[in-house]
Each structure stands twice: as structure tokens, then as C-alpha cells.
Length: 245
Image (cartoon, rainbow, N blue to C red):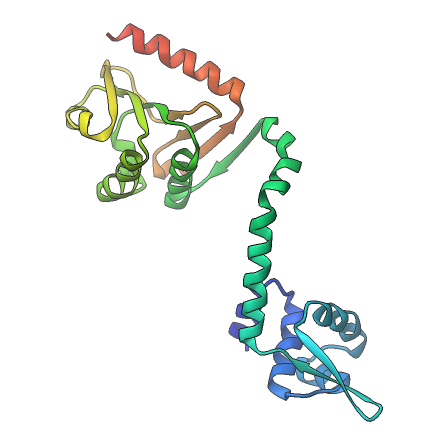
């Protein structure tokens, strides 16, 4: 029962609404009293939820004589309605984004975690219209989050497909030299930083945000979404870049 309720809730229903729909589905045709008994909810609770379900096209009211009953729409109809609502939302998405355009200029800092957070950062980079990003790294700390195969198959492959390039400052090491050797085929230009400098964070700098990624064991990825801050980090990157010609 709980599993079915969770499935129905994914269509946008509350727990109580999902319980009422499931009760109506099992009963076939039911009165308010029968729905209350089956869903184990109070009748007073049902009344305001029933109106919402009817307006959403999930329940259909029907009369037999003077008695009012409710019939549940088929699950396939619920799925069809949900798809139509999603399609309508997608059609209106540009209008909604225009309404919220002012939000993009407001600075925002937030934390991400683990492998999912690491992948989310790269989705942000590669889904943006930017064609170049800067990176300061030791190289190896990426492997704390994902296997090298993921980096090659998902990040580098998509990067090349989209025609995105990068400039990289990487701490000198044997592993760094292996990475730099692949620069040409991975749309990248690199320069080595002296090995004496430790880089516990990898910093990825775009035109609109900066992502800082630590070792997975420190469990910290934070993103600063602010064009002015990104511009400052770009300037620092360029000073370092020029210093290690």
C-alpha cells in the first residue's frame, strides 16, 4: 500500500489525496463514507480534498438517485493528464523564465555533495552556452568522485561534442604529465604550476559561476553564482597563467 501511495504521489498528489484516489480505484464506485473508511481518513478531511481531485480530473462524481458517488479515473488517464500538463509547462517555460530573469543577477552560494554533486557541477558547465572554462587543479582529486572512465566517456566526450575548450593550470606531477599529454585531443591547453604548491581544491571558473571541488573525503563542493566574482577569479587565473609561461 505504501509503495502504491508513493508512486501516485509522484504525479503531484499529497499523501492524503493519493490514499483517497487509491481507495476509489479499489472500490470502483464509492460514497464519501466508503472512501473515508477505505482510506482511513476522517469524512471532514475528505470533503476539501475531493473537490481538488475532481478539479484535477482524477475523480469523477456520479449520482445514483439522490446518492452521490465517486469513480476514480484510470491510472493511464492520470499519466496522460500529467504528460499534457508537463507539455503545457514546457511550452510556457520561456515566459516563466523571463518573469524570473531578475533572479539570475543575484549572487548565490550553495553546497553540493559527493558523486552526485560532482556530476551536477559538470552538467552546469556543459549545459551552459559558454564555450570555454578555466580550471586550476591537481588533476587527481577528480578521481575521488568518479572513475577515470566516467571523466573520459561523459565529461570529455560531451565537451568535445559541444566544441567546448578549456585552459588548465595543473600542479606538476607524474599524473599531471599524463593529463597534459592528452591536451590536443581533449580540447584543452595546459600549463604546469610548481609541485611545491598544494591544491587541495580544484577550481573551475566560468563566466557566470565558480565551482570549488575538494577531495570526496572532505565532502565539500561549493558553487558561487556571481558574474563579478567569476570575473575576479578569471583575472587571478590569467595572472597565474602568465607567470608560468
